[in-house]
Length: 78
Image (tube, rainbow, N blue to C red; front, side):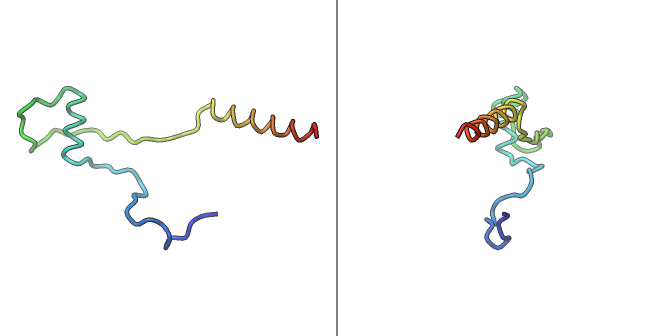
C-alpha cells in the first residue's frame, strides 16, 4: 500500500540532484587531485555527478529464492 501525498515528508527529493554545492564540488576535486590548496573557490571546473542506482544483485535474489524454498520446505514437513 502506498502512502498518501499529504503524509509524505516535504523536504525529501523525489529524484537525484544533478548539481553539487560548492563544498561538494571541492571535495570531489580533492579526491580526483584536481584541487590545489589556496585556489579560489570561484570558477570551479565542472564535476560529473554520478547517480547512484541501487539494484538487487544476483546474490540477493538467490538468497531470497533459497529462503522461500526453505520456508516452503519447512511448511511441507509439518
